[in-house]
Image (cartoon, rainbow, N blue to C red; front, side, top):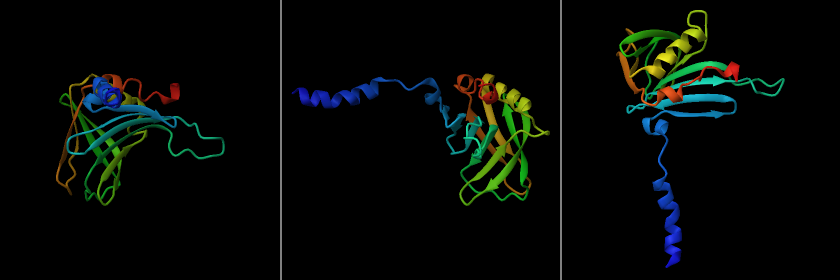
Amino acid sequence: MTRPVLLALPILLAIAVPASAQEAEGWGTGTHMGTAYAGLTNADGAHLGVYCAENIAPQGAQAIRTGAYVLFSLPRKLTLEAKSVPVTFTVDGKATAVPMAVTAEEVATSFDWAPTKTFTTDQMRALVESLRRGEALTVGLAEPAVTAVTEPFTLAGSGAALENILDCAKR
């Protein structure tokens, strides 16, 4: 009689442990090989991720990527002629256009921001801070060659998930 009870114990414990508020709201966070990340995927499969990678590669080895960067991806291929397009982040009705590099693959299209003179880390830090404090976020683009893209994301849980996310140089 004790054997079935012992076998059921892990199942009961798994049910009893609540998920963190960030996971419940869709924001995933963590650190992997020197890269801090926070991101989420919406109901349509669009993904938004904010990353900050430290250069922790052994001397002489090339790091895959360092510094702050933001990725936005769609689970479908878009036909875009430009190698870079403005992606609009609208937080609580206030729009910010961010120049992002485009990579179109067979089943997805990705948009990638890295610091430049036209949109600096400080500007992205201000945008991320508005994401932390905002209530509604829509990420989109209006490219004449494609149907307009508008993807809603939840900002619930973003306050903790995005806190100091772009401060990898300070860690």
